[in-house]
Length: 355
Image (cartoon, rainbow, N blue to C red; front, side):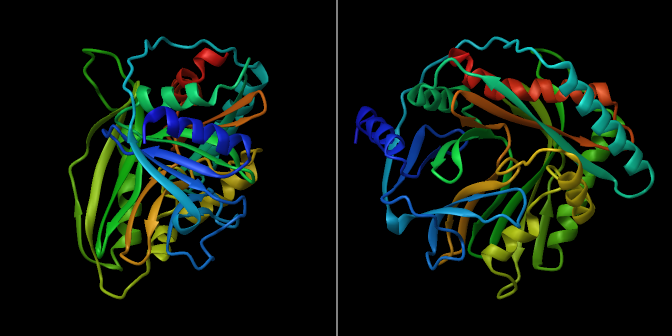
């Protein structure tokens, strides 16, 4: 099926309030489309074993699924275009900045009282749009960030979301699994030598240690790579790959998802304390930001799941951009604010023609 025909089907799906998702894996030019035939709400408690999952940050909220059995599926190669990327200037309200700085300051004090080693705090940046062009949105998400997991998701119960995530939550194939620790952020500047400070290195190690601790009891083999630089759009992160073998009969795929989510990279450590702190102090609901998404086949124990980072939700004529930072005792509130501003550029580039 040609691109134009598929995109027209997407437009019709959206106009008819029918769920759909399209996605492309990192460094791939093929795009997968899943178009649900009805507008019912399915979750992981349904009997379906093959589905695309859209999971929220807070596990008390339900996972939303698009079952393959209830959907049309297509795969196509998207037309590659090169877009000029320039920094998008969007005004920040002084109250928003002050509120986030205070949140970071309060979080640092909490960490220094030995309650946690890391807590990830975030904010929602709302930008008014002149118009919403779904096909332009799809084109820019796919083309701007070819090294990321790119997606556009719609469901009447969740609204329209899109993103370009650099972070794998979990990849499984039978008993084999692969995940990653991703932390630390710098703005990419051509020909600049990347240097990481002690705060950033410690933050990365907290993520590695926490994931290792969560998995060591259920794995027969676990391998941890050296840490290296990972470019994601206009940003550079520290990355460590973690892989291994799950003990036979030890844990199901849905339980493994729950064991890893939320990772210290989007929540903190210890996880339960950090999560409670986030829910009580961020003063907005993350919804599906820092949740996860991707295709799952429980019959073969295959999955390819990504953390929902560098994402936004579009409601009416407003785009809600979600950005956050990992806070440790060594954090500088102003630098953390600047980091969230850098991260917001990822989705601002996507909607630049709609501003």
